Length: 484
Image (cartoon, rainbow, N blue to C red):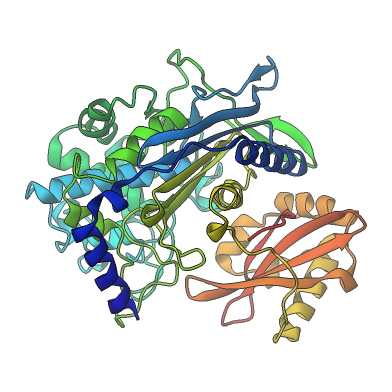
């Protein structure tokens, strides 16, 4: 079936190129009203201070609009020019930069990264550049809670040189055999930024500025800097026990790594979106490589449908290229439907902003064929898993120590302080009989289950998974949402 679909697409684009390149018509007042209503409702439910929404058709802006507050303390509203932090959406620019250097013959995707890190341990030799791009390297996550805390090697309040960062990364363990599975690691893109520096002699962000942002006229897109005066900069926020707090401070080092430390706005993203429909920056073969799901050693696609800095997760049979980001009280999402000539960017200034769902629903309000399914109860064929979650949640609500039940990675995330935050969120809502399964999907080599917990008008979504040893490997809570 896939071959038939590809053949039809080739016929259409070959004989009727204007159909493929046609931009969408202007949004109707009804569409804009529906978007406004949905965004306002979601902001209220999630307590999001501010959101910017960009809707594009092949780079043409259909809507660029701000909602809520850019700065709560000064009562500054969000507008299209408001600058947000990119988080990991920045990875797609790094991926593009690497592919530029591949086209120039300066980097080979199939070469070992030890070419650039000659002091790396022997275990790094099988890791290729393409494994960093696709998150299949097996390198450990440098940004785990234990490693970025006061006693960790990557304490976020300290500054380090690139050489010092490399030395610290080289001391990290290998979590799995290269190419054996997919697992998201910011470590991979931290190293890719350093490779760009080594190959070009330019700091990666300067290379991005020179080769991508400046040529495209992305005048508000740049590296994070708390020292510089930056017009229209938003403030980032976090929720603690339902109370809005300012983002936590990190050192300039960790506001400048290539795993996601940029500023941008919805106006600049339009220019980026437009460039991705042509070959202004990269050959089509390079773009196609970035947007091809990377296979694992067994030849099967990775569980996240991840390429190089992009995910490709179809929605109702429609092809997508997408990626999200989160950093310092900001969350954002870029969602592209290239065959439908539609893209949506959602930027928020809240750590728990949930922009992916907003982007998907906004797309569905423009094209009903793209509307995601609602997050409703589904049959649960693993009642034992639900029972284990009920027991686990009851222990959290009761203030019990659950550390022994956590995997090592989860233990670094669900610290005693974090457990207290979860306890506070659950105390007023926890009812064992209200737990219902609403979604189940692969994540790395695990399968994550999402459950809704409800009491009256209040509800949370709990995500949960056990590893092969029966330890809690995935756990998190988020505000309830209507759509997947």
